[in-house]
Amino acid sequence: MTTFAPLAISLLLCFTCHLSSAQSVIYSYTGTTVSGDSTISAWFQFDKSAMSDGLVFFYDIPQHSFQIVGELTPMNGEYDHFMGGGLDFASSVPGPLNLPVFQSLVIQNSSSKYFVESDSSGDPGVFIGGPDGTGTVYSGRWSFEQVPEPASIMFLAIGAGLSVFMARRNA
Image (cartoon, rainbow, N blue to C red):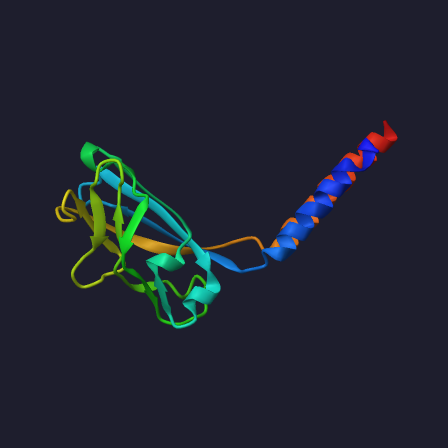
């Protein structure tokens, strides 16, 4: 009976992956200060259907990471709380040729209460941060990352389950 447990687990994973067949996309941002003493490393994951009108609002982004590290110690940390804004794209089709053309995100570090936001013109390559959202300027660029489709995860789960099953069977 325990020989079939890995196969059952992998089939359960496949079923779960099939149920969550929503297509996610990830857009990443990397930026630095002019002096290079502080950097931003961030990614934002959301369902591609949120791009249907070219706009992705902060509440359409269920997962993100926005980390600042460097010599500007008060700015360091994870910016984990969206306060507003969003991303604007030239079209509704996600991909490396459709990077943000406008951004108005406002993100707060809930520990330090510092926050970063777009500049006054919505330049997608600029974030400005500090205790009141002004001061330190970060310039950078966006990139697109493909998220593995649920079908490919399903095949990996089946393969892993079958290999464990075959290894136990041959032992």
